[in-house]
Length: 215
Image (cartoon, rainbow, N blue to C red; front, side):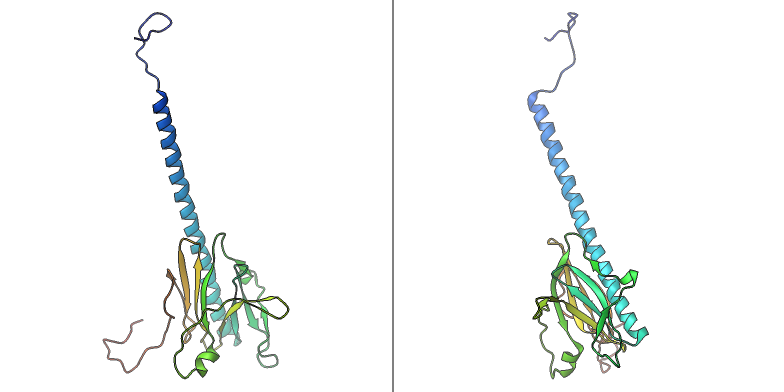
């Protein structure tokens, strides 16, 4: 039995090497779980914050077009993961000429770190009006102009409240969500996951009362 330097029997027992190794392994595993949990939380927070800012911009564009009696568009730069707002400066004298809105609250913004644009589907109001029948929506991706500059996808909001029908997906690689914009009213909403259909505010007035949607 172990004895102390004074010759008395010692009742203290130290950790064995195996016990120490087990403790270290447990600490490493628990530490890794905490780091993974924090990383997942941060990724979710980044996705939510990006969605919030993009949704606010879409809502602002809708209100801007209605109150200023001019078209406003939400421009999406999928290459740089950025977005900004543009307005039609003079619809009468210079129709189709857009300039960025430079107000502080609506300055160009970048998605949160790790967040990027996923699939983007846009159908312009002109295309929808000219189509005889409902057509499938094709992905809208950034294209290069003749001079090599990037022409980003854009959703246009009109003074009468209408807008381009759109689905804008955001993803962090692990999670995703989509902003859907209704063509009739320009209303925008966020849905978790990848949206599989456009948002529509239209409904049939001939439906029976129990079939008509409620708002």
